[in-house]
Length: 253
Length: 314
Image (cartoon, rainbow over all chains, first blue to last red):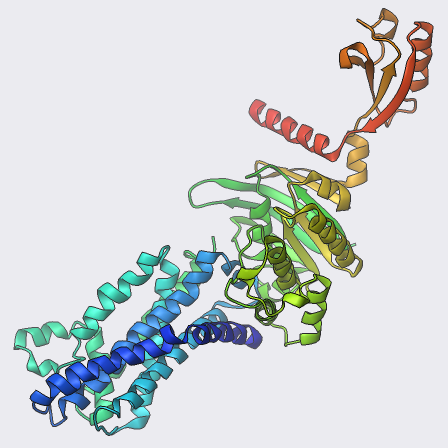
C-alpha cells in the first residue's frame, strides 16, 4: 500500500480547499443560513409541527443533505477533472499508486470537506432553531457514508466530463432537483398517495429519511431500507470506478 | 549487461484505428543517454507513455529494471521519472509544495534535504515559495524536472526537454543531464534539436511511422552514414570539369570558384592526395582547403526520407 501516495493526493486536495476557503466552506454555510432565515424562521414560524418536530428543526437534516450531496459531488468531480483538464494527470498515472489509492486520496479529501461542511451547518442551525439528536452515532454514520458515496459519484462524473459544462450538468440538473423533491423541506407523507409512490423512486428520499430518523427518530421510510439503499448506491459507485480503472475509460488511453 | 529498459514487441493501435506503434523492440543500457529521434507523429511520445504507464499497449511487454510495467507496476514505476513534453503544472501551487507532492505520490517518505538539494541544483531554491503560475517558461520546465527527480529515479525520460527554452538554459540543462548520467541515472530523451542528440547521446534510435528504423551508437552512426566533404577554393573560376577529373565525386559550386569533393571516411584511401595531384596536372590552382563532416541532422533527414520512400514502394 502506497500510504505516502494517498497522503500526497489527500493533502493536495485539502490544500486546494484552504486556498479557496470562501468558495469551499463559507459559501455553503452562508447559503444554508439563508435557507434557515427564509424557510425556517420566516415561513416556518407560520407552519405547524411535522410529526411532532418544529418545521425549523425538521428541515435541518434535509438542508445538511442538500449541501452534503452537492459539495461531495463538486469537490470530488473537480478534484479529478482538473488534472485531466490541465494535463497534470500524467503524474498520477505514471506513479506507483493503485486505483484504490488514487480513489482513497481524491474521495477521502472530498468526503472530509463535505463532512466538515455538514457539521458546520449543524452548528450554524443551532443559532436559528433548537434541536436534539436522538441517535448521534447513526447521524454521524449516515453523514460519513453519504459523503463517501456521493464523493465517489462525483469522482465518476469528473472522469466522465470532458468540459466544464458536463461537470456541472449532473449536480445542477439531476441532484439538486432530486434533493428538493426528496423530502428536504417536507415529509413525503404530506404528498398525495400517487406522488408518494413516485417519490420512492427518488434515491435521495432514502438518504434524507434515514438521516432525519437519526435526528428525531421519525422517518418517511424504514431506516433499514434507507441504510440498504445508501449502501447499494455506494456499491454501484464502487463497481463503476473499478470498471473505469480496469478499462482506462477516459483516464488511460 | 542486462538492459535497464527492455521493450519487446510493443504495438499500439488507438480506439480510432490509428496505429501509432508497430511491434517495436528496444533495449536501453544502464547509465547511458539514449536519444529517440523522429518526425512529428512518429510514435516517440506514445512509446514513452507506454513505458511510463500512461498509455496501455495493444501488444507486447516492457520491463523496467527487470520489472514488468503492468504486473509489477509499483516496482517498475518507482524507478522511472518523466518530464513530459507539455508544460503541465499545478499553477496555483508553490514550487516547494508541488515537488514534495511528487515525491509523496511515488511512495517516498518526506526528505526536505533532498528536495532542497535538487531545487538548488536546478537554480529553483530562490523560487521555492513562488506560485508556479508566476514563473517563466524556462523555470516551469525546471520545476517539471525537479518533480521528475523528486523520488530519486534511476531512469529518467525527457520528452522534448528543451522545447521553447533559450540557448543559455538549454546549455545548462545539457550540463545537468550529463551530471545526472554521471550519478548513475539512465536518460532517454526525445528531441527535435538534432544538435542536442549529437551533443549528448551515447546511442540514437530513429523512429518513423511507428517503427524503429535504426538504433546505433552515435559515433558509429555518424561514422557509418556520415559523409565527409572537402571544399577546394580556386584561384580562378572554372566553367566545367576536365575529363581527367571525372573519376572523382566532384561538383562545381560558388559560380565556379569552388570544387566540392565528397568522399567516404571508411575507405582506406580518401583520394584527396590523388585529386590534388590531378588538379595540379590540369593546371587548376587553389588557394584554400576546408573539410567538413555530415551533421547528425543530415543523417537523420536522409534516414527518414529513405524510410518514407521504402514505405511508399512497399
